[in-house]
Image 1 (cartoon, rainbow, N blue to C red):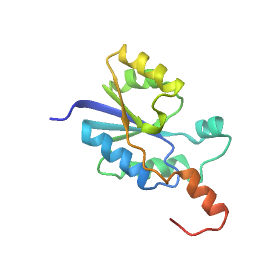
Image 2: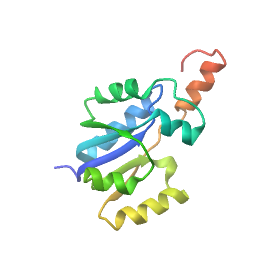
Image 3: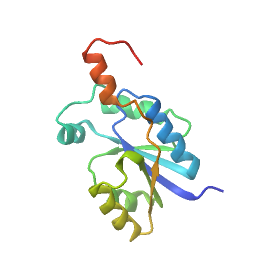
Image 4: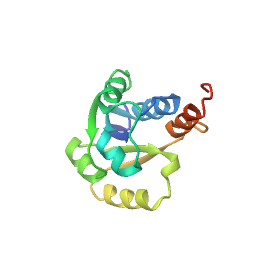
Length: 143
C-alpha cells in the first residue's frame, strides 16, 4: 500500500524531458492516484512573460499518455489549496528546488492545516525546459 491516496503535482511540461518524467514517476511511487495539473498557456504567459513552445492541448495529451499519470487537469491559477480541496489530494509533490522558498513555506503551512502533505522530490540536475530552449535558440544540438 502506498503512503498517499491522491497525489497532485503541476508543471508546464513544455518540451517534455527526463526531469519531468522523473518527477512524475517518483510522485506515482508514493500515491495510489496521481493527478497532474498542466499549466495553461495563459497562466504560463502571465507568470513567465513567454509562451510555451508546445501548446497546452498537446502538453496535456503528452502527459496524459504516461502510465504513471492517472488524470490530467488544466492548471488555471497558482492556488494550490483550492486545487487540493477540489481534487481531495492528501499530498502535493514538488521539485526539491522549491524547498525553503517563501512561497512553498507558506504552502506547507496552509496545506498542513487541511491535512495535506508537501513532498519534495529530487530535482534532476542539468535539465530544464529553459536550458533546452536556450540551447535551441543558440542552434546547439540536443543534450
